[in-house]
Amino acid sequence: MDLTRASGVGEVLPEIARRLNFVILKRVQGDLFELLEEPPEWFRLIFAPGENPNEVRVGSSSLFLDDFMTDAEDHWANERPEPLKSGVWHEFDSGDREHYLEATALYVRSTSVLILESLGHDYEVRMQLFQKARNFVLQNQTLDYELQKNDVLLHFLSTQLGPALQKIGRSLAELKQHKLDYDVLSDLNEVVRVAARQDMLVDTFLRGFSSEIVTMQ
Image (tube, helix red, strand yellow):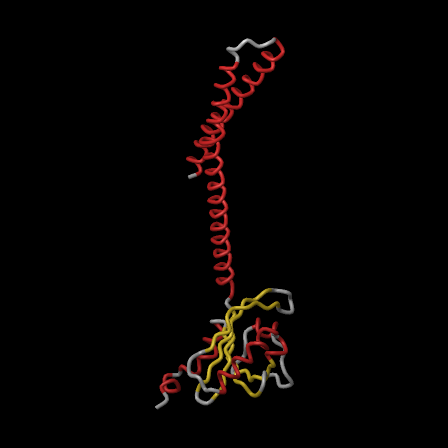
């Protein structure tokens, strides 16, 4: 007993397919397919009809599907029972509107079938969310890289430059205790002041940058 026919499901399958944005095609030969029901508008806007209104050459309208036919033909020739997915791609219709599509090749009851699905607005929303998530990850990676650079800079200032300036300041201060002529002493005093200012600048930078990094973390 054919349960599908007995329950009347077969009569509503075309309507179900249209509402779910599916188009079911039966392969005739090559990339020529027969429509098993009236397709939705998006299909007519993308795929040009063949000589027969109920037929369409999918490869002539889509380079992606033309390439997918190679794998699909191997799938049908080997009568594989599992579905073969094409993966998502996009097409522009005659009104220059973008559609995200996915194809499935099936071998059912000695028949080669191709199902085309329009993923619609929900897929676009998901892709936008994925893009936002990707941008967020990239921003975090950039921030982490900047923090690492700042950490290296802080380490250099605190362990190398700061102590070196302090040592220079002490050495110059000791040198001032010796008897020097006026010009040398004047130059030495200026060097001491510059070293002291640089030491204060490093200290201020370290304190300010440390608080900023804590805030960023």
